[in-house]
Structures are given as C-alpha cells and as structure tokens.
Image 1 (cartoon, rainbow, N blue to C red):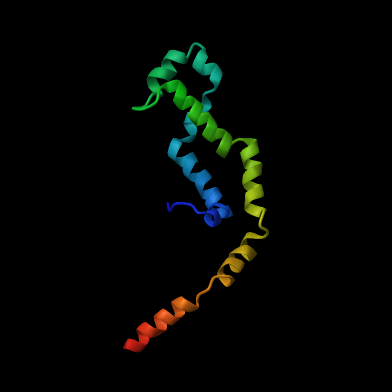
Image 2 (image 1 turned 90 degrees about the horizontal axis):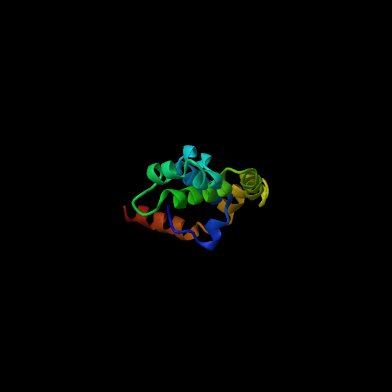
Length: 117
C-alpha cells in the first residue's frame, strides 16, 4: 500500500480499504477477548497462547480491542458509512475525480511516442 497523502487518506476507498486490511491482518477470532478475560481466570492462558515475539498476551488483547473498536464496532460501522457517503454519491464522485484530473501531459507524451514511429 502506498504511503497516504492528505488527498488519498480522505477518500472513502482508502479509509474502507484500511479498515479491511486491519480486519483481515489481525483476524476476527482475536476480537473475542475483553479486559475481564485478561484479569480473570483465563489470564494465564491468554498470556501463553496470545503472546507474540514482541508483545505479551495482554498487550495483544488491548491491540485487538483497539482494532475491533476501529473496524467492527457499531460506532465504526456508522463511521464507515459516513465516510463512504460524506463526499456524496460515490459513483458521481469517482467521475468527478477523473474529470478533474489533468490528462493533457500524459496524452501529449503518448502522442509524441506514437509519432516517433
């Protein structure tokens, strides 16, 4: 994925793509744990089975919950819909992006290449 700029980070496709990437990268099954699990009877199992090379199980549960809140919770679902429709109709806006792009330098380069024969 390319480094986001102000323009790309504000487009609905980028935001929804980022949500999808986070959801798929971490895995839905990891979102089942809560803070009560980390401090309760399952704490030892969580620490053993959810640890990674750089994070302990409790830290990973907190990270998973952050991603869940960002990507899957009711709030994030409403936010994703808002981001998708904030700029207006997505199809019309895609057409506006294309129409607003200066294609003339690229057309001139292709025409110059074709004239070279």
